[in-house]
Length: 586
Image (cartoon, rainbow, N blue to C red):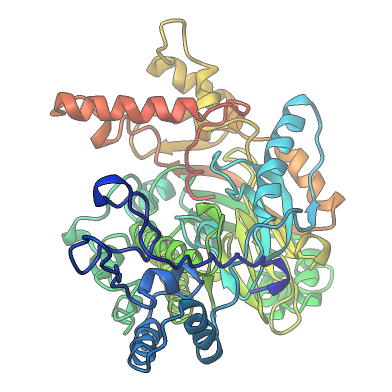
């Protein structure tokens, strides 16, 4: 683990000597090896203390770690005592010869690793937001296993804890995985499916409402969806053990926050299909442009129209539990080899048993999340009586392995070349009233070959909603809410699973779409091949207080605990009105 970043911890001296007594024969201070005498003290009787040559605490203080080797060392100390060795210093010298202590613990760097910034401020609010992002990245990039970092045009803080990777942040880590850097919503991702239908948007939305699910919790058992991914033999992995039910109940389920199911249309030209083919994606070009190709000549249509379903979600309860277990293991492992590392930056060494198992668990979570998208898309196609011509997609909260570097993205779209040397295809949503961008990655190594994952925010969800609160602290009434949403989403059919709109997920809560799109080109992150124009959208909406936050059925103690947590959260809010809240999937 990057030995150059480690600093040696001094070995504490071992103090040896007889106990010190004051008046009345009582022990005054005594060192670590001082013990009461083994006989009554009177007259000139010599006091001979009974002590162990070296004990477990001595070995731990000297730098050795808990484990099987410690027992072997204590046995060696016992043999030294049998041989009559009484000098702890000499005994320690023999132990260092026979049992080399582990390398000194590594610590945070004095200076941060390099940071590439693919973002440009367009005003004071942008400037403050970028400054907050850079402060967090400066903390994170002092972690000894991180080589480089980058921030995307949609970057914004995801909390205030030290070294918390911001949304739109990416890091290159040497042979290790940092669970907090991919966040709890492992494999938050996008998928787009192209199909043909004569059904109007409202009919499509009706079918989509029956094909997906939003909100807390999961599907009822009678509504579980079947998929081969549930039958994989993975459940003996320590990070997956006992999570079979979570995998089953959340399939066909999108959760809440900024997750969505988006219906749109894509008008593809022959030039756009040719661009896909030139980039090596001939199969996709053929699937999306058969009319353009088969007609040919002067009679060929100028464009072909596709209906498109785009879904955005993560790994739900399954991923959340895997993350919690991985984070706990990372904190424990990091404490053995490093000191002073922030909780948000603890890592798992890939070469360790724990790290290898976590990597395998992440691969399963990736397959599960893809299956989740597939279930929703297949269900909609079946209900509409159509077939899917082609599907594309990508993760943007994940870890990717490239040789011995592990690229971590928290709300960052992979934009490097795939194993066949082709630019990766990506989907970048901006907000519900803006087109979703279909892009080809530019493999720009300066920015770790990532692109943004969306529009990003300049203020938090709560801060955005507070702008519409009245003096009494109440938000807009139902009629005003609907007016605000309609004003921002003209011509788009918007549905909320919980009926009540969530203003924090409307366009006004995000950065301007044109600004982010412009900076994608400005910094050479990706090439926009096509756009998917919005027709309709489903999101979770405002479900009100979480079950554990509602006053009903709460004891006075529970209410005090909720108030205490709220007060602690407010005390941590000192940065551009950012609440210490999860980004809801990235």
